[in-house]
Length: 367
Image 1 (cartoon, one colour):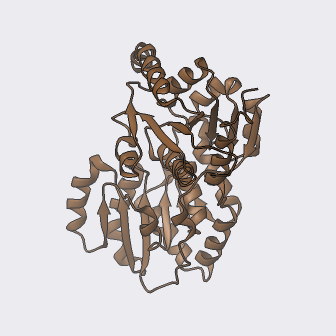
Image 2 (spheres, one colour; image 1 turned 135 degrees about the horizontal axis):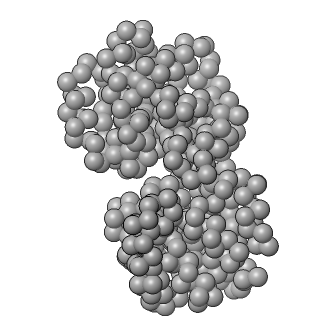
């Protein structure tokens, strides 16, 4: 906290997936180190219900579902919940009296932002995708500031103050040292906090193929909670070295063990790969709104840090073939690791905190 900024309270809105929650926690930690109070608003069924209390931040609950690409019935249910959720969020904001509200987007953020705008509380949004998500896109012209990962995203916030900051990543990712090549190649497979059916299926298909690949591997696999028990039981019956987890809380520790990462391409995952300097094979989620995962993956591939494979083409055989090709090209993984770090933006959380602090004394007041 700078000398000109007295302690204040900030409210963080956004949840549902790790990509929404983890960057918000990074900003919240930065604010806390500056002496501020931070509160979250989320839903009890989202990943925030686990991650936010584990990070030792208070959280309050609203009831709301998604509105974008969820089908007519679910849309109608969510619209029916909206008035109550806005009222709930309004009461929470009255109690917190925040200097500003910070949003990572997602359906959880919608009611909170509507309540904040109604009360003329400044809203700072962080939009990680080239094309903003549904909530940020609909409320773009009302926000006070927009922090983005791509310069072209600013056009969606016409007339608002925008800045390219990148996405906050925990400091531990930047602290991961270079990993020397060993006889056994460690591969991390992660489809995000909820897992990925495509990545899980391809991983299982790969198990009997590694023995004939000429490559010694160790697999570390985050499966997601629901498929974990069945997959783990079948994995135990194989001769493949490795371990499975439904969810990995300390992802930096696992990243430090990995030689290559197989992942979806949400901006959170891409930013962590860049910060850690990890070579990757990215399989973008084909149903991601506006193909933003494909855009994210292509950005990392363009600097030489990743291989991009379409979801429909990702099989166990392709998995093994891609890894063998990378491992068999002398110096390739090391070059990819160095290229990944060029994509990293280490000051995103600090810059977001600076912007939020600017509203304490009104310097960043609503336009």
